[in-house]
Image (cartoon, rainbow over all chains, first blue to last red; front, side, top):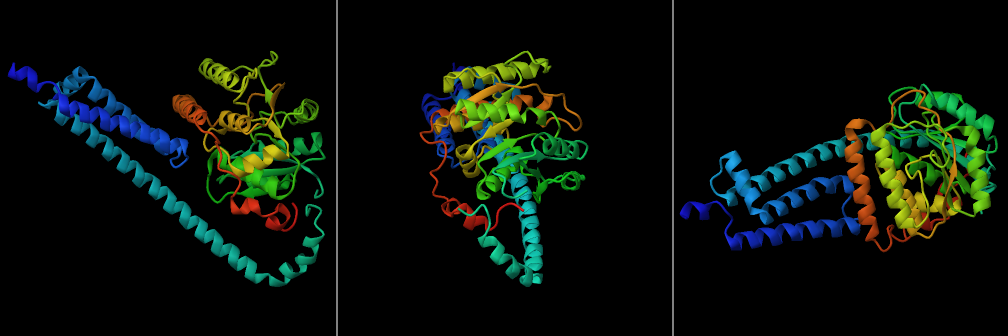
Length: 139
Length: 256
């Protein structure tokens, strides 16, 4: 009897886990809807929240996962899964930040190059000015 | 070249093998169009081949992805005051000889956005089974949402008028944009329409969608469609500063 009790999530913990992961899920959808979060970055978050939600609703599955990886209490297994997702999310941020800083560097370099090219040719720029006014695209 | 009100937008990423002939063919088949190639951070001679063939070339300093590249083209078209813009892929699968078909359809149907469908008539375009399944799912979904019979929402061979240009210059989906762009147009009350075209098998290079990421593609587009259903206005209103500026002032001179 005691052993059986240890194999499922306590009712209160389950309630909290379900509400928490459901809130996360709907918050993500709302962020997406308002365009505060872009889809490529939302995918991992959505997977995390859905897996956590499923595991906290479906207690037998959580118990099996716990058993499978050799964790005695399901609550700890839920923590371990959540922690795993946090690690993956953090790593993905590092990857994205690396890409952004590389692109940012290239933008700065290109801007510097264009600034120089611009300042080298002020005369041409002034010559081009009258032609601009007569541009056929000006409405 | 300047003075034309019509432009062809050619997104190209590492397409040195085909972009030159694509540009040459566009200039031959549709001489009243300006040709703009968006070299999306290619590491080969795409930009040079395109320029040599007589196109204006925008080179992105790094790869932005197909959505970002195409939007560069629409922004250019918007700023340049173009009235009509056509998208033709740089890989040669879209036949410039059929630009006229799209143009006719745009004119006669009164639609704002028209694209060439491979499946309206049996045009002999063979598609791998997996992709056909995806295509059918998207076609049904888009048809249901827009209440129009749509057969090929993933086609990138499309033409838009000034309204479409303005919408896409302001906002364009990122990675897999075709389906989402249609739904965006629809939710902004733009009229959409299809016309039957034949497409060629790819000349060189490879499709941006291979078997490995086909599943991811499905998930991403389905998610985008799903989220889009719950947006009242899928695009922020046109308060963006650069759009508040008249095109003539924002760009200064016209193209070229």
